[in-house]
Amino acid sequence: MENFDWTKFTIRIAVKAKLEDIYNSWTKASEIEKWFLSDALFTDENKVLLNKTQNALKGDRYKWIWYLYDDIENGTVTEANGTDYFQFTFAGDCLVEIKLHEKFEYTIVELTQKTFLQTTIQSEIFGWVATMAGVFTSLI
Image (tube, rainbow, N blue to C red; front, side, top):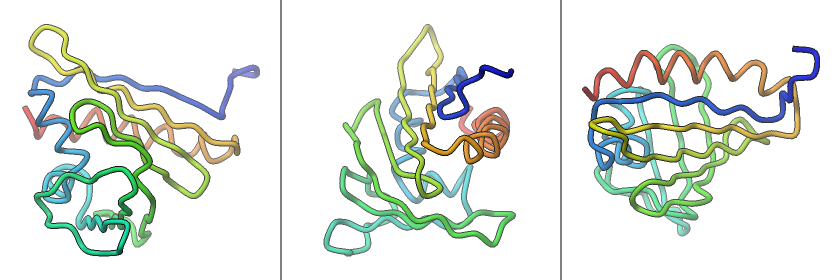
C-alpha cells in the first residue's frame, strides 16, 4: 500500500431499496437520523432551519451530531440534484460525494471522499465502510 493514493477513496454498496429512499436518507434530516446520526439539522443559505422532512439543497448548511461521539460536524451541501447525486464538505478539508444508480432490484450507493491531507483520509475510510455496510440494512 506504499503507493496508494490516500487523498481519495471510493466505496460502493448495493442496497435493496428504492433509489429515491436512499437519496432521501442522505438529504432529509428525518431520514439520516434513522440510520446515521442522533440529530441532524439543515439550514438554508439565509440560516433558516429547514423542516426535518425537507431535502437539503445546494448551498444549505448542516449540523450533524453522532450517536457515539461528542463531535459535532458542520458543513455545506455543495451539490444536490434532487434524484441521484449529493455532495457535501466533511471533516474540514474533505469533500464527500454520493452517487446513486439502480441495478436490478438494488440501488448502488457510491461514496467518494477527497481531501488534500492524507492522514485525514486514512482515519475516515473505516468509519464510512462500517457505516454503509451495517446501517443501510435498516432501509431494507
